Image (tube, rainbow, N blue to C red; front, top):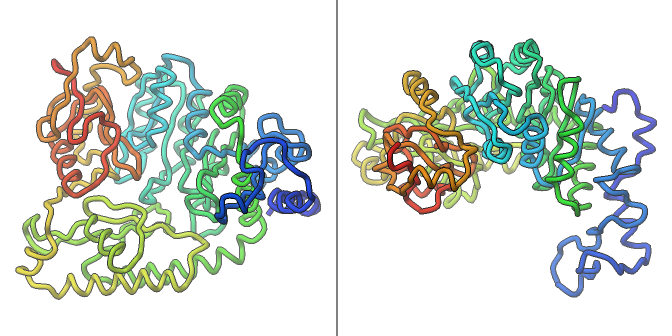
Length: 500
């Protein structure tokens, strides 16, 4: 709820209603956008009649004095933040603004190695020097944060991702306390946790756990339009002035009023109706999770601290040899092609199925019935059938998506091998000499470009890191399985230092 300010809430205008009312006023637009709200011209059902620019009476997001000032203030109250900003360029612009607004060129930052690519882009754009902390089973160890900060007193900010794409949650409260002891801010990429804090079944949101800057993607787990997000700021450590400035610089100067209306409606939804809606959602979700947990071959994955809105389903091994394994990509394809169920993403050994309060009983039943049927087929097939019908790919035990590197010795070797900073310019890299090599040939070489699979957009290889043989093999297998590898200039190859 709106922290006891129900009367003010009731008086606030709904941006969506205001747009609908304006569409019926008879005003003729001699202004942008060029469709002129003429729905008949195009012949589609897109909401042209609601799509306006900064005309009289509708405020300006970059210089808000009216409704677009009041609505983010309401969002701050709903999310228990001191200051909140509407984002119409997704969490990406929030992370870019938070990192760049909190640092100066050349600063050192501590960042989780499983951060989204936008954090790496901020490192590049602001010429920062990153120190990586590696997740342990998906979560960030507070003790490791403390150790690294003590060894690197020049770190200016800490950036972590919680929950992860798979739903793993870190101990944000402990991490915030450790970071604040050093007098620096904690930036939380909580893009996948916009639903946190609205029901005890889910974790608390990081605004209530001590984080200084928190980014939420409304569209990921709540009923909002794609590209809608929020940036929150708290306390005195966040450089609010500079972060605001970067939000204005990096965000579109022509923000979509349809997207902003979507943010407004979504925030009102969780602020006013979360109790009843989330109760039903949780009952539906818990029923589904219990049924899936009873499957014999397919396994429901979760850790000690976990976002249970994510249904992460792993495929089991059907024999002693890798060739007997049914892959996550195959499960993804079967769900999509046979059952018309579109998962969020697949890795070598699991699929991520995202839920939200907007899911229906019918949709959930279709999912569980499909998984039960697939599980039954896998359980009853003999070894010959599995070898010939199911296991087309050999998949490594390591789940690269979630853990990046599982083996501690390999992690320690990797993070100490920085040959040059990813903030170096392309010209500087070329002077050192680069070449593109095939995945199977890149093991042991130093990367000169990023490689990541989207989704989730977490770099599996970062410029300056020496590529392990294990990662090289897995990238080759991912490509064979049909995963889309991005960040590299040449398909099937990665740029590396010639003499690295």
